[in-house]
Length: 348
Image (cartoon, rainbow, N blue to C red):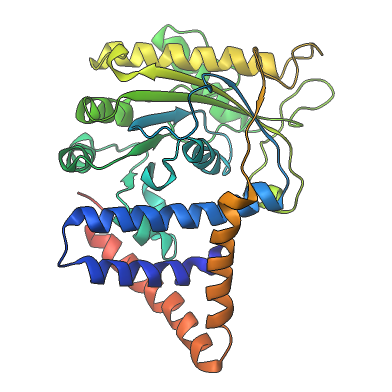
């Protein structure tokens, strides 16, 4: 998938240049379409190639072919979590509208860091969150009335059951806040959520609160192990992915800081209970969430055209010495220029 980065950035550059004299909505529509195509390429590998099975529970009845602006929050435990967000967005016909709130260090990821910024993803510094900077960026999206699915990981970092020090710190923090310590998630931070609710209220209509669990991630004694990441999935050591979806009207969520933090704490306590059910030693509970289980379908028709496009372009670029040289130059100089640009322009 990383090999497609020079292809993607070349196509995006052409789109950007051709749409400069046109209204911004033309560029945004084409960029969203390009982003959707690339993420379908990712899903081709992560679902169709690996054979991973995805199951959903909860509020899934109205998912198909329904476009809406939304804020998406979920627990964070694996590099697969952002792919899972794409899976849910695809079912809502909103894959191209996905924007991530992601950690600042990823802005220097070769080629993609630069592109994610152009796609209106928002980089935030862990431990040094700038509300003013994020407000400017989110307000810009709302003002332009651009379609959006804003993806937020409120924990701020991945939960790893093997990191005992991090878990101990989270429990100490929970006790200081007067809330029940959680076993399967970290305490959520409200900063990014607060900004999105303030600035997107009236533009976004719903919040999708998704709880993610991976099968085969416990020992025989019930001890949790580290969740599989993208490398494990690509090696086809793919467990099932289980998603509990809760759809919440954005008007039902408070925007006052203290009230929002209390609401977010309650949502993550609910996640913790769901995950305790999933990882239970009770055979009647283990490996599933409560309620009806639905099979989430991602078809070859949804992903193969994207795979053909990117793989076909890659083959063409590697055909001759001249095109191979161009491919490596785009990779090298694009990375350097992107990192330099992001050093000065990554903040709003």
